[in-house]
Image 1 (spheres, one colour):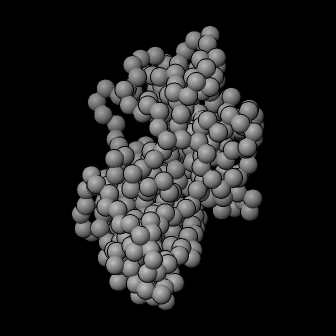
Image 2: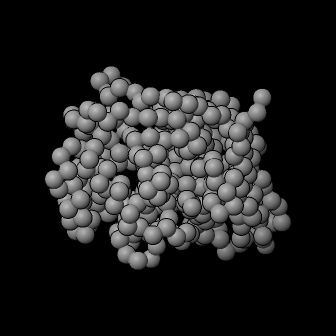
Length: 334
C-alpha cells in the first residue's frame, strides 16, 4: 500500500539559513498555491466532495545535556490547491510562529525553539477542515501547446538518464496523441514496478532495478518518463485518507500530475493504479481522498525531508529527538 517518507532532518554543528523565503506573521490564509489563468484549458469536472478533519501532531524532545543556541522547525501547512482542495479552517498550536513560502508556493509554520532546555519536550499540533474534490478530466482533445516548466531533470527525477530516455522513447513510439503517450508511461509503471515499502527515497532510476519501489519511486519514475518526452510533470506529496482505515496501508502518500495539452494539469496515481482493477480510477481522475500537503519533488525548505524539517546548533552540546509524528484523518462531522 502507499507510503512516503516522514523523516526530519537535523543539522548538527552547523546552522543554515534558507535564503529566498518570504516571511510574515499570523495565521495562514486561504491563498491558493496556484489558480487557473486566462487561456488555460477548461477546468475538470468536480464529481463529488468530501470534507475531512485532519490532525497532525509532532513532538520534539531535548535529550540534553545542553540547550541549543539555535533551533528552528519548519512544518508544511495544508492549504488551498486549485482544483483539488479547499481548506475550511486551520488551527496551529502554539501560535508563536512565522509563515514562510518556498519556490513552489508551499507554506510553512516556522517555529523558533532555541529556548528549549535539556529535558523539555515541545508538542506542535495542527488541526484542519479540508474539503477534497473528486475530479474527472476530458481527454477528448489532447492537442495544443505545452508550458516550458517542470520539464528538467532534478534530484530523484533523472529524466536525462540514458536508460530513462531510451525507455521513454520506446514507450511513446507510435502512440499518436500526447494522452496515449503519457498513458503508456502510466501503464508501464503500474505493470513493471514491484511494490515494496522501503522507507527510503531512491528516485526514478533506482526504480528500474529490482530493489522494489513505494509511492515515491512510482511517482518519480513516471515523472522522469514524462519529462524525458517533453511533458511537464509535478510531484505531489500528502495524505491518502483511506490509509487510516487499512491497517496494511499508510496515510503518507505521493503521486503526481502531468500537463496534457488541451487538458491541463491532470492528476495520476500510479501506485494506487498499479492493479488492473483500479487502473482507470487514477489516470486523469482522482477520488476525493488525496490531500495535498506539498507540491514539488525537492522543496528547498524541507531540505530533503517530507512534511517537516528541523535544524539546531551546536550539535555537540545537546541532542534533539523527534519523539512522535502522527496524522489522524477522518471524515468531518458537524
